[in-house]
Amino acid sequence: REYIERALSGGLTTFGFSDHAPYAFPDGYYSGFRMLREVQKDYIDTLIGLKEEYSGRIDIKLGYEMEYYPKYFCETTKMITQYPVDYVILGQHFTENEIDGVYAGGATDDEDRLAGYVDQVNEALDTGFFTYVAHPDNLNFTGDSTIYDKHYSRLIEHAKKLSVPLEINFLGIRESRHYPNDRFFSLCGEIGAPVCIGCDAHTPINAYDPVSFGKAKEMIGKYGLKYVESPSLKKPREIG
Image (cartoon, rainbow, N blue to C red; front, side):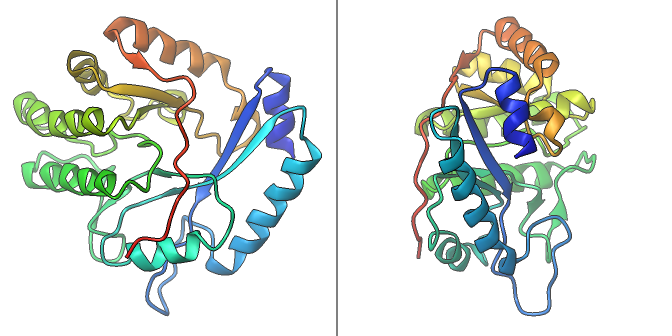
């Protein structure tokens, strides 16, 4: 409710919730940054109730932010799609997966890690499951710029081919993270890939974030980006 009221105070007419999705991990594994599977129904029921309560004032969308972990993906889509979810965004925080893989946000000059991240994101987009890519420049590559361009261009070109927007992330702006990366979005401008924005709120006050919005708009103008104000939501379906 606090998120919605903050969004309304800023004049927003649509607001999407995209908490970190539960994942179908093996028994005994606990993920420290996503909702538990048993909380999923409460999450959906709460949002359905708020959507009805605020009908006519703001359009509430029910969604998730989710990684693409090939080993567990099909079973997870089965779990997600049993509820009336409007959309899922791709937020790739690990290569491979969080059990066997490596956190994507740590600084690295390893070309193989960058190439693997791009391969995994592109494979995720090929599933048709995701509406857009949150913080697509999350893999924090600190090596040679030609290697950066070589691999991230593959991601950007694939997103353009599939018409999947790449997000300018407000959390990264607010916290001065390594994303949104100017080099990445300059490539987006050159290639002509669609981009969108996401507040990545984490706290209610950031559900409306005019300062980050202003900085994102500056980036859109600076690099001549193809801004998609309202991405077309893809209804998630069971895969596999």
